[in-house]
Image (tube, rainbow, N blue to C red; front, side, top):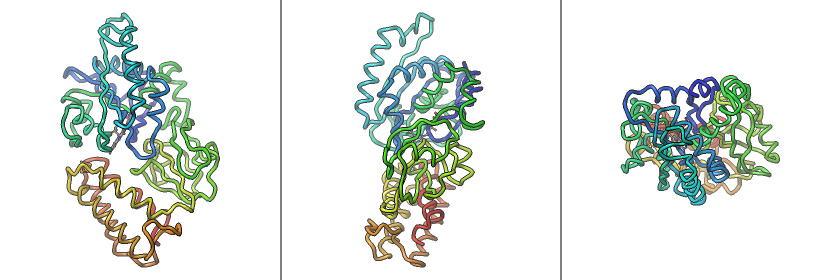
Length: 380
Ligand SMILES: Cc1cc2nc3c(=O)[nH]c(=O)nc-3n(C[C@H](O)[C@H](O)[C@H](O)COP(=O)(O)O)c2cc1C
Ligand code: SF4
């Protein structure tokens, strides 16, 4: 089973694109006991809604996948950390766990095979940072949801200080396809480095927003065409608030981890937010900055202070232009030369956040703003 998952080339769908087989093998090989499986169903990246649809649509698939993950990594307990704002998913999953126990699919003797595994569902309380795996462990342990320094990595010291395999919902559900089709067939979908199918959460200025499943390697243009097209497209935010903008004419970008990296952006968890030219970009940037300032856990200085300074500078840039921050005219909200100091400050603060923050939140908090300035010419 471990070999199949490794050979399939499956990489995590939660944003960091880590190879799942390697994570499972590293967890399974730890002598320290017990081992845990954690399903990250916090789905807190703005613009992401694929995990909710998977859980509400087929909760048993996730239960089966978590059980398989437990079996493969030597765990007998799985925690499902569910975004607090998903009441329907909570109802559906709770009922499914009860039914699975009643049918012997969970419990002391799964399918009469002598293997014990059970799942406990825990709800988050609305903090974006609790999607970061080590903050999630702290939250599960009843502590503040603050990220831990890595190393040690979760496979060695995760939940309750024990070896833990933490995976995203979509990653886990893909394991079922790997085992059903076989590693080779799965690896034949997509590209060499990004294997299998991928769910994309398409929203914004498109005719048919929603979730689209495509093999990795389809282009941004193909995806937007499926979503009914995006006329007058000015920009696309890939990867959510932690991601980056590309221009509306960059439709050839292949939707793979390596393709987006080469194009100087990121795929993240699969957010594709289309913006036409009626959308006020400064307002969107301010909203993203507000989000990071709000969601920073405050543990480390570059992020705690940097996210505040970033938001302040974006406010000033909008005000200095003499236009409303809402950019009612649809412009970028700046005049040539105006605010050069603030843009320099943004770059300095952004570099400090990227280089010196403890976790991915601070490290990515300036990505979207930077890409809007450099790629879209915001405030030029
Ligand atoms: C600020 C922040 C928020 C995150 N939120 C989520 C999330 O909501 N869901 C998720 O699966 N991963 C999230 N991650 C990534 C997790 O830390 C981790 O990499 C992931 O759950 C591993 O699963 P995977 O290997 O299956 O992708 C987040 C990371 C950061 C830095
Ligand atoms: S980078 Fe931000 S969210 Fe992450 S630990 Fe530091 S303060 Fe907290």
